[in-house]
Image (cartoon, rainbow, N blue to C red):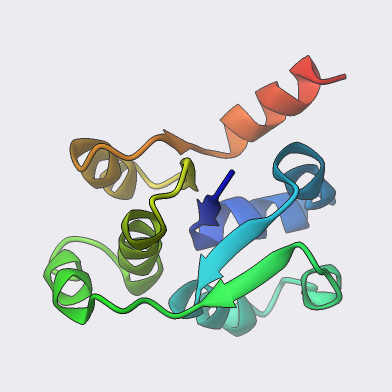
Length: 125
């Protein structure tokens, strides 16, 4: 299963001390370089667990034209996550922002956010 994440699901789960849920539920998560840069720029996040993990990988997007077209309506992390999800034919895109989710859904991507992750975790016990 291929899971791509935008910035907010990772940052929000870090803030509530539940980043491990991503590994428990999905085993591995791929983030685009732009998301990694956004995470590093956030002053209030402790990225130690992410840096030490073997289940988070960072991958650069290749379709810069599509990325640039998405920047008209989305931020860099959201645009890159959508592009990477399409490039990898991801099973799930993790994203919380409404505009990004709507765009991803319009492109046929399966999207869930932090609430969906927490509900899945609850269902798994």
